[in-house]
Image (cartoon, rainbow, N blue to C red; front, side, top):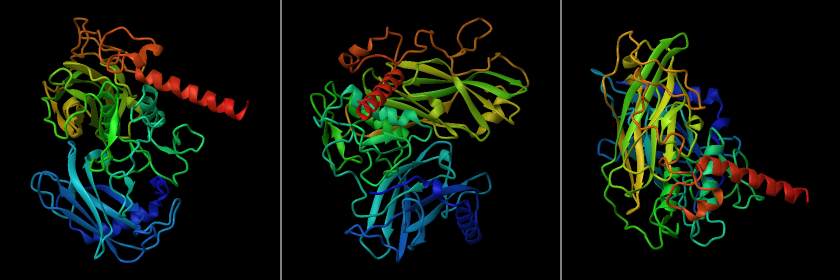
Length: 478
């Protein structure tokens, strides 16, 4: 199916749509920029449908009134088009005395899950996805096509499984991580010269999307939820095997000697956030925040990630300690910070990051709009679970500077307490390592340690990328 990035959408067109919506809807809460949906509607012969109406229904997973938005089907031209529709999904934030109403989705710092159903009014064409929305989704433009075959994948072999042996090698697994890590937008495209048929970044999209690109519908970008899923498939069995499952959201399930059951119980995962250092200077309010994670029973989790939704005006300045993630948080979407781990650190661990909050006078003021969520999967099942990040500790509100914080950079500057100890709550033994303080294994041993610490995976991804470019140059210039 043909999909393109939404960057072509004219600002004037979006502005016009916003004006019509604001004129037609009376907002009770505080209006926020909504999600702009657009895409193709295709009949069972793959022909573009440009007449009639399309209804989008968002039903809260936890219960509540659904939101219904209707769009007129027509012909919309643009790169990758023509398209059939455009629709604005309104957002608002309730405040005391002004509760949210049923004509808009309620936004919060903590992500909420919805079943999103697109249905041609009076017809059989429809598509359904489960999506998670938070304040980080404000103002996004998302392509969502509607057709009878736009649901879960019908492929029997995963796109990452290049040699089609129903097992993921370390290189095949890292290739998916490379798509996510290589660009700020996590885009990928079709590439007939690539060994897996795909390339990094924006490019041709006139074919089948990657099997990993499934969450909320394929959009030619890899999200944090999708990265958690590929880690889950790779890490849950010792032979990294999988099998096709047409009932699964992505069309696959774990397979092999340690395959889990279809159902699982969420372990007691908890994440807290604490301000461990701050200072106000000419550059703004600098904060050092520590996330403390308890992963429940050892070995229960197959994959874990955390997404922090940052308030407006915040700028990420670097990691300052703790268990290093496999990805670079600076490549996260604007307004978010994303951390993913492989393997999942056992037991309890911490990670500390630093930000600059421009325009805030105190940590208490700056933290009002900060929210976060942990996304995780278990070895024993196929479900995705989420847990909110809980603020803890006393938040300083006065002009005092209880801990001096260095201007953190990605080179790993650490802040220290007056007693000289690390402020991230760890013993210092895990800084710079993946999943613990063990010695790093040589690259050639990585495949022999599929469930244990190896080279930092970000470095392995870079090495594989360089090797891939070298092979391509050799083929083009023998």
